[in-house]
Image (cartoon, rainbow, N blue to C red; front, side):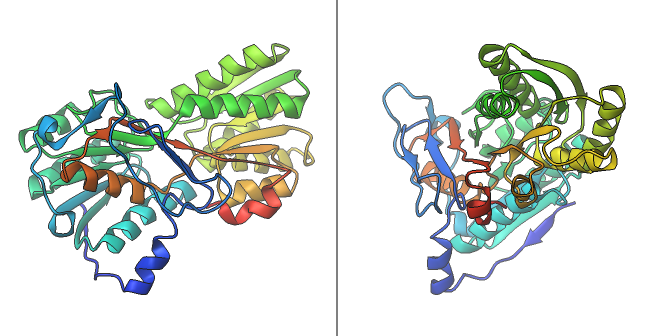
Length: 362
């Protein structure tokens, strides 16, 4: 059901080199408990500290959670990935967890992949709990449906760190903390980029992400709210789920172009769907720039799409959670209060920086 990955302690030189990257090139991270922002947004982040809580911020401690203080190096840690590692986001996310575990000398990391099957993810995580893991890091497929996992983890006081998608539950009770991007803000930034690309008028289609999670909901509402505010002459006239998949994004875009051949813009709620849309546009005889595309993620393929003229802008959603997830856990087990929400500050790419900064993409 899951893979038990054993790591040798990394060599000093490799460890120092790894320390030069935390959330990865071009990332910033803001801890809600400290209000501090680390990194410049244009260069690799050298360090990230989850500081003590600012007055009034929502935090959690090991005592509040009922967790025992453990040494991560000797602990059993479980990581549950939600989707198959064909998407660059998932590849980078899983690798970041594994790399940071190796850097820290964690020798008992159990990993699983749900392959976009929610029932499998629940079963995977429950099996990890039964096997005796002492910390869980979960990239949830859905935001609801985790009650059985919470019951099992709570009975054993196992902290759960959720990354990249939020679970609809209570922080510091059902799970410890959420680490991820501000998805509504990503949608707003995508709307601003679309308004600029279209000169504040036209018809736009939305390739929706997978249903049942807060990423899709917030990236949609953020985009729509901002478009209505800054460019009321831009109308959203088509919406269909592309499931965050390149293949599905292409199929949906092909249907779009049949029903609305003169569509002006496409908002892809992730890069994979946007790249699928480009394939559909090429098949329909469209040229770069005929339809303005804005997407979210920050993959190399999408940033290259800007360079090639097919995409107007890409809003980053950084997947390199390993360093911040394990640093947060280390602080927590050491008795330091940690924020119940830790929000990453993402960069953006457009024609002004895509060619020079493509090396920061994943």
